[in-house]
Image (tube, rainbow, N blue to C red; front, side, top):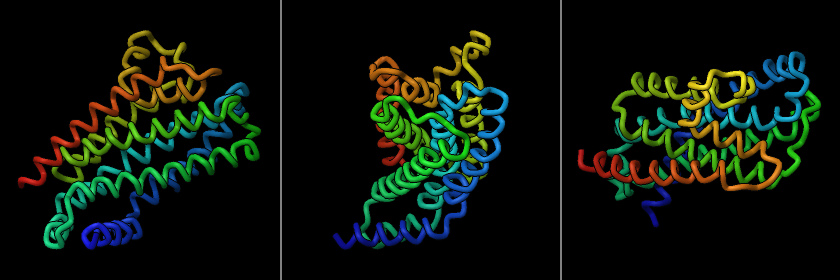
Length: 238
């Protein structure tokens, strides 16, 4: 129990001083929402129907892929790892607490967008809030699991940032949140299906709850969790 409490306290301190998490989970999504929300609704008035879903996908993808990996590198590639081991804290706890922290931040930011989008841009509340929130929670979990692979596999912050950006850009550009996927060449539509953001957005904009777009997310989640387990064992042996 003492090891667990030490891990929680240490994670709390890391969160308080983490500018990356603050910027990627709150500052940039709000700036993107303020600028692009106005552009989307002016150029494409129909975008009000899915503005909340689009902004949620952007927020989750950015916060997970760009925000989480550096936090994991800070834990497992620095003296923080030694502090965990010296105090008898399982290294897996760092991964768990970091993911929980990021999950809460992204959920809070998504809820903020859910509330202010109708007021700011007359965005439409999802017709089926239950489907939206199930899709949102699933997408956050999947995106964080993929980001965890990056944070555990890459050895330094520079390479982590580069790989995160390489995944983030196609995730947002090909997911359908920037413009309808039917405007993309077929090869790009197929490529977009490799990223969780595409399936998450498709599910959150469905009129009825179906498993068609949710199952791929669960498959990615299971694979990512297994890979994180293997990578964590490799980190523990170093």
